[in-house]
Image (cartoon, rainbow, N blue to C red; front, side, top):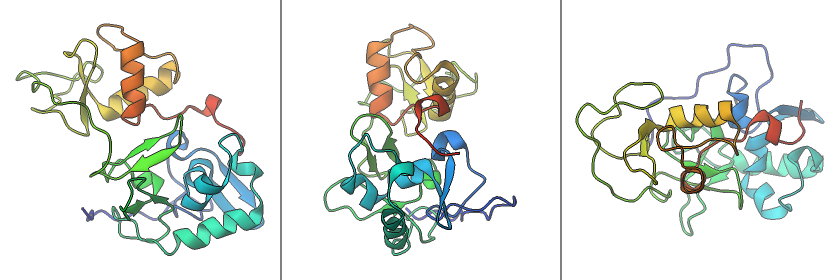
Amino acid sequence: MMSSRKRKASSSEEPVCALCGRADVDPNVCGHTFFASGIHVHEFCLMFANTISEARPAWVGPESLPVAVVRRAVRQANQKQCFVCGERGAAITCAESGCERSFHLPCAMDGECVTHFFGPRSSYCWEHRPSQESREAPAEGTNCLICLEPVGDSLSYHTMVCPACAHCWFHRGCIQQQALNAGAWCFRCPSCQDILMFLAEMFLMGDPYPTQKTTMGGK
């Protein structure tokens, strides 16, 4: 599933992340950038790096890691190619046993990957990601309840439905933005206002991203 879309070089003068190779990314996706002994790295890129997630307790923030551990993560990532953009520096590998697909965190959406920011931190490629149960397709002319644009004719990575009322359809990007605006623990179905089923399903599907207020460290 190699994408023809390559990562664009940053047009800013900011130093790029040693893992994803980018500076101009949404901080809600990649977290703060912090600097240690000549290395600039995004908080979440490092948090999900294979060597990091396997070696550190969940409560230890990436900014507290020894420089040697960060350098090891960068070296390992440089040996892996992102299956989405084709470039090296892919720090994240699918958690499915036997799957060797790796990707950059900013490439996850383009590659239709799912990353769990809450609970046991894990990431999945397009083939092994969790998906919503099969449901009836949205009725013709159904619009996203958030942006009011068409949602398409089927359930997909980019088109989702509320698990509680089963008739509120929305785009993945729209519901992620709503979660960021409302707060990761305080958002609900835009239609039926369900919280419990809706929140549990959105977390399983990889939504929402954590907000700046819920993340650790960095600058």
